[in-house]
Length: 307
Image 1: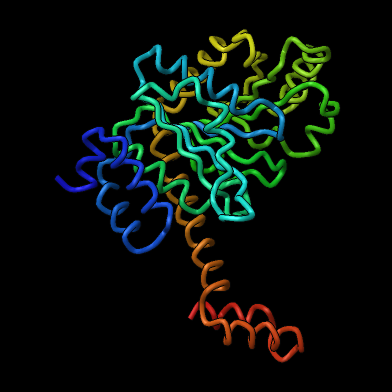
Image 2: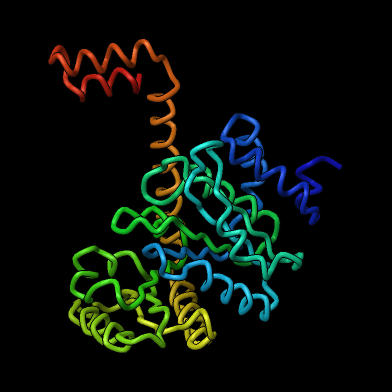
């Protein structure tokens, strides 16, 4: 039995090796994804985003427990900052999710951001496809928490959960930062802290200012406490409500097309960055020099690279 077949049969070590191959983004990894892709499309993807210190990993641990109670197999992709020494993930999220380490139906994979903008590494969606093909029912993608730039994850998941906590400034500043634009659900974590009720109230009030369009999803604000578990059932109910909304009419089909487009754009951008960083270095350096000295425009340089 080959490596891929063993991974699909539930061999955790084989799955780990497959993920390493895919994350390397070489030709072998692309061949693996091409082979597995027809087996994908069943898993639910949830994106978890929010500022550093908001308690993303702690909340994910609670969500894992809730999904496991439903009998779901759960995979977590934790996009960590890259190590300055190895270029790999710092593995911080594996440390925080140790309470699930002995559950064979929970798989946590830390991935290095490798400087990718937008909160996702280029291989994140491909790793998600591997988990999907390996019959994981729910895939949680936790991103770095870099604020306004962290939008890529919302484009490649079915439901995005933006986490906010009291004490990071008032709700108006949250709105200015663009946070309300990236969440299908907004979880106000540490809801037992002073100011949490005010934050929930203000966020709901600002969301209510948006025109209530028919047949459009309207984000919900859910107060939770990852430490005590308070509000987690309500958050799960909100996730179910979002799922039911997507399953009505052609919404899920339309979302899948949007996700496909976002994945293509993400990988195209990553490939262009790879060409710039590792392609014909002499040619690239000459193009940079030509643009800097006004011999050609930046647009003309891009056209040459695309050829």
